[in-house]
Image (cartoon, rainbow, N blue to C red):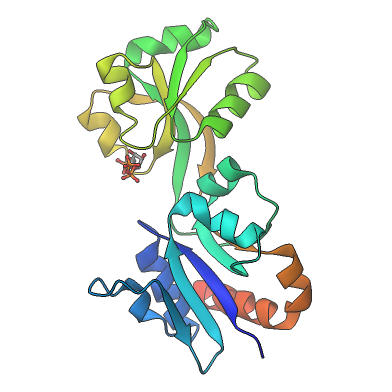
Length: 214
Ligand code: PRP
């Protein structure tokens, strides 16, 4: 039997992901051991391997078959536009993709003005403004702390995920438009889905069961 490899997105989803795998009888707690520099862990008994990766890299590993299964936020899946199967909504990691900014920016949005949009998600932002709103905008790619954009005058608004809304509030910004709801997803490499169908379906079914019993 060959190893099935999981790519797990680092950050906010890790805790819930580990709890879920544990409930499915899949032990991989070493993955989150902060004292090790080791990157990949093996569960010999189940012939599984696990590694943590930056969220946006998870769909890359899965598309290329370097990982068979990925667990990552839907925001990342939408942004990366990779050829992967999305097989399960995990229901945790719930948040919203939004256009946010200072209250006075609402005016610019409704008038379809040529605005500057800062985002970690340039594809989602482009798609929303160009295809859904038919509004031409200038998109500025940032890699984090996107809320700074409108505060320091880099952009008029931002496109970003909002979970509790506290980051926006603390910076005098608010949700101006909602793009879509988001949550954590399981993705699978299309070839793995065929070659390892039974094993992968069993894992996904176990996850579903574990989620329903919560
Ligand atoms: C995300 C997002 C917002 C914040 C939203 O950033 O980009 O900044 O969380 O959460 P809230 O609505 O609960 O305040 P993250 O913490 O992942 O870090 P980053 O800004 O470095 O990307």
